[in-house]
Amino acid sequence: MHRIEAYIRLALLFIIAISILYLPLLIILKKKGKSVIRQISYIGLFCSVFLILFATILFVPITFQPENYILNIKPFNWIGTVNSFEQFVVEKVPNIMLFIPLGFFIPTVLIKKRKFYQVILISFAMTFSVEFFQYFIGRSSDIDDIITNLLGAMIGYAIFKIGYIFFKKINWWNRLIGNK
Image (cartoon, rainbow, N blue to C red):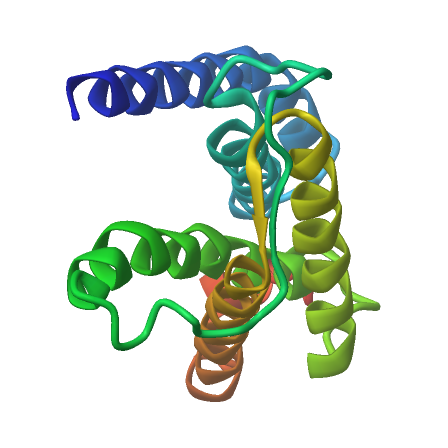
Protein backbone atom coordinates (compact mmCIF):
# COMPACT_ATOMS: atom_id res chain seq x y z
CA MET A 1 0.00 0.00 0.00
CA HIS A 2 2.93 2.33 0.70
CA ARG A 3 4.09 1.98 -2.91
CA ILE A 4 0.61 2.85 -4.22
CA GLU A 5 0.56 6.03 -2.14
CA ALA A 6 3.92 7.02 -3.61
CA TYR A 7 2.59 6.54 -7.15
CA ILE A 8 -0.54 8.53 -6.36
CA ARG A 9 1.61 11.37 -5.02
CA LEU A 10 3.77 11.21 -8.14
CA ALA A 11 0.72 11.36 -10.42
CA LEU A 12 -0.71 14.32 -8.49
CA LEU A 13 2.61 16.15 -8.64
CA PHE A 14 2.70 15.62 -12.40
CA ILE A 15 -0.83 16.99 -12.77
CA ILE A 16 0.05 20.02 -10.66
CA ALA A 17 3.20 20.58 -12.73
CA ILE A 18 1.23 20.36 -16.00
CA SER A 19 -1.33 22.79 -14.63
CA ILE A 20 1.37 25.26 -13.61
CA LEU A 21 3.12 24.93 -16.97
CA TYR A 22 -0.23 25.58 -18.67
CA LEU A 23 -0.74 28.87 -16.82
CA PRO A 24 1.13 31.08 -19.36
CA LEU A 25 -0.90 29.55 -22.20
CA LEU A 26 -4.04 30.07 -20.13
CA ILE A 27 -3.22 33.78 -19.77
CA ILE A 28 -2.47 34.16 -23.48
CA LEU A 29 -5.70 32.41 -24.47
CA LYS A 30 -7.65 34.53 -21.98
CA LYS A 31 -6.33 37.65 -23.67
CA LYS A 32 -7.54 36.23 -27.00
CA GLY A 33 -11.04 35.83 -25.59
CA LYS A 34 -10.88 32.17 -24.58
CA SER A 35 -12.63 31.48 -21.29
CA VAL A 36 -10.47 30.39 -18.35
CA ILE A 37 -13.09 27.90 -17.25
CA ARG A 38 -13.12 26.40 -20.77
CA GLN A 39 -9.36 26.01 -20.62
CA ILE A 40 -9.74 24.22 -17.27
CA SER A 41 -11.95 21.66 -19.00
CA TYR A 42 -9.11 21.00 -21.47
CA ILE A 43 -6.72 20.48 -18.57
CA GLY A 44 -9.29 18.13 -17.02
CA LEU A 45 -9.45 15.98 -20.15
CA PHE A 46 -5.68 15.88 -20.46
CA CYS A 47 -5.26 14.95 -16.79
CA SER A 48 -7.98 12.27 -17.08
CA VAL A 49 -6.17 10.61 -19.98
CA PHE A 50 -2.84 10.92 -18.18
CA LEU A 51 -4.22 9.33 -14.99
CA ILE A 52 -5.66 6.43 -16.97
CA LEU A 53 -2.34 5.80 -18.71
CA PHE A 54 -0.38 6.27 -15.50
CA ALA A 55 -2.56 3.94 -13.44
CA THR A 56 -2.87 1.23 -16.07
CA ILE A 57 0.41 1.19 -17.97
CA LEU A 58 3.05 3.35 -16.31
CA PHE A 59 2.24 2.21 -12.76
CA VAL A 60 4.50 -0.87 -12.93
CA PRO A 61 7.69 -1.60 -14.83
CA ILE A 62 7.09 -2.52 -18.47
CA THR A 63 8.57 -5.73 -19.81
CA PHE A 64 7.93 -6.86 -23.35
CA GLN A 65 8.99 -10.40 -22.49
CA PRO A 66 6.86 -11.31 -19.49
CA GLU A 67 6.98 -14.74 -17.93
CA ASN A 68 3.19 -15.03 -18.04
CA TYR A 69 0.53 -13.62 -20.27
CA ILE A 70 -2.69 -13.41 -18.27
CA LEU A 71 -5.96 -13.02 -20.15
CA ASN A 72 -9.42 -13.25 -18.57
CA ILE A 73 -12.27 -13.21 -21.08
CA LYS A 74 -14.89 -14.65 -18.73
CA PRO A 75 -16.87 -11.75 -17.23
CA PHE A 76 -17.55 -11.58 -13.50
CA ASN A 77 -15.74 -14.82 -12.63
CA TRP A 78 -14.54 -13.15 -9.42
CA ILE A 79 -18.09 -13.03 -8.03
CA GLY A 80 -18.65 -15.70 -5.43
CA THR A 81 -14.98 -16.18 -4.58
CA VAL A 82 -13.80 -16.04 -0.99
CA ASN A 83 -12.60 -12.46 -1.21
CA SER A 84 -15.05 -11.15 -3.83
CA PHE A 85 -16.10 -8.09 -1.78
CA GLU A 86 -12.48 -7.15 -1.12
CA GLN A 87 -11.65 -7.67 -4.79
CA PHE A 88 -14.60 -5.46 -5.77
CA VAL A 89 -13.44 -2.66 -3.47
CA VAL A 90 -9.73 -2.92 -4.31
CA GLU A 91 -9.90 -3.61 -8.06
CA LYS A 92 -13.30 -2.79 -9.51
CA VAL A 93 -14.21 0.45 -7.71
CA PRO A 94 -10.92 2.15 -8.73
CA ASN A 95 -11.53 1.07 -12.34
CA ILE A 96 -14.96 2.68 -12.23
CA MET A 97 -13.63 5.85 -10.61
CA LEU A 98 -10.74 6.11 -13.07
CA PHE A 99 -13.06 6.55 -16.05
CA ILE A 100 -15.67 8.86 -14.49
CA PRO A 101 -13.65 12.01 -15.35
CA LEU A 102 -13.13 10.77 -18.91
CA GLY A 103 -16.86 10.21 -19.35
CA PHE A 104 -17.45 13.76 -18.13
CA PHE A 105 -14.67 15.59 -19.99
CA ILE A 106 -15.11 13.97 -23.43
CA PRO A 107 -18.48 15.66 -24.06
CA THR A 108 -17.34 18.77 -22.18
CA VAL A 109 -14.33 19.37 -24.43
CA LEU A 110 -15.32 17.64 -27.66
CA ILE A 111 -18.46 19.53 -28.62
CA LYS A 112 -19.19 17.26 -31.61
CA LYS A 113 -18.88 14.13 -29.42
CA ARG A 114 -21.72 14.77 -26.97
CA LYS A 115 -23.90 11.80 -27.82
CA PHE A 116 -23.88 8.87 -25.41
CA TYR A 117 -22.74 6.33 -27.99
CA GLN A 118 -19.85 8.59 -29.07
CA VAL A 119 -18.56 8.94 -25.52
CA ILE A 120 -18.88 5.20 -24.95
CA LEU A 121 -17.09 4.39 -28.22
CA ILE A 122 -14.19 6.71 -27.35
CA SER A 123 -14.05 5.29 -23.82
CA PHE A 124 -14.19 1.74 -25.17
CA ALA A 125 -11.36 2.46 -27.60
CA MET A 126 -9.29 3.83 -24.72
CA THR A 127 -9.95 0.95 -22.31
CA PHE A 128 -9.58 -1.73 -24.99
CA SER A 129 -6.27 -0.22 -26.12
CA VAL A 130 -5.01 -0.17 -22.55
CA GLU A 131 -6.06 -3.79 -21.91
CA PHE A 132 -4.59 -4.90 -25.24
CA PHE A 133 -1.28 -3.19 -24.46
CA GLN A 134 -1.24 -4.52 -20.89
CA TYR A 135 -1.38 -8.07 -22.16
CA PHE A 136 1.92 -7.60 -23.99
CA ILE A 137 3.81 -5.84 -21.18
CA GLY A 138 3.39 -8.47 -18.50
CA ARG A 139 0.19 -7.27 -16.88
CA SER A 140 -3.15 -8.99 -16.88
CA SER A 141 -5.88 -8.22 -19.37
CA ASP A 142 -9.36 -8.61 -17.99
CA ILE A 143 -12.80 -8.22 -19.55
CA ASP A 144 -14.04 -7.03 -16.16
CA ASP A 145 -11.71 -4.04 -16.41
CA ILE A 146 -13.30 -3.06 -19.71
CA ILE A 147 -16.78 -3.45 -18.22
CA THR A 148 -15.99 -1.44 -15.08
CA ASN A 149 -14.16 1.25 -17.05
CA LEU A 150 -17.17 1.65 -19.34
CA LEU A 151 -19.43 1.82 -16.29
CA GLY A 152 -17.25 4.67 -14.98
CA ALA A 153 -17.48 6.47 -18.34
CA MET A 154 -21.27 6.05 -18.25
CA ILE A 155 -21.41 7.57 -14.77
CA GLY A 156 -19.22 10.48 -15.93
CA TYR A 157 -21.49 11.01 -18.94
CA ALA A 158 -24.55 10.91 -16.66
CA ILE A 159 -22.96 13.63 -14.50
CA PHE A 160 -22.37 15.70 -17.66
CA LYS A 161 -25.97 15.23 -18.83
CA ILE A 162 -27.38 16.12 -15.41
CA GLY A 163 -25.23 19.26 -15.42
CA TYR A 164 -26.31 20.00 -18.98
CA ILE A 165 -29.98 19.79 -17.99
CA PHE A 166 -29.82 21.65 -14.67
CA PHE A 167 -27.15 24.25 -15.40
CA LYS A 168 -27.88 25.10 -19.05
CA LYS A 169 -28.88 28.66 -18.16
CA ILE A 170 -25.91 29.31 -15.89
CA ASN A 171 -23.06 31.29 -17.41
CA TRP A 172 -20.09 29.36 -15.93
CA TRP A 173 -21.53 26.04 -17.12
CA ASN A 174 -21.94 27.32 -20.68
CA ARG A 175 -18.35 28.57 -20.68
CA LEU A 176 -17.16 25.21 -19.33
CA ILE A 177 -18.82 23.25 -22.10
CA GLY A 178 -17.97 25.77 -24.84
CA ASN A 179 -21.42 27.18 -25.50
CA LYS A 180 -20.24 30.77 -24.84
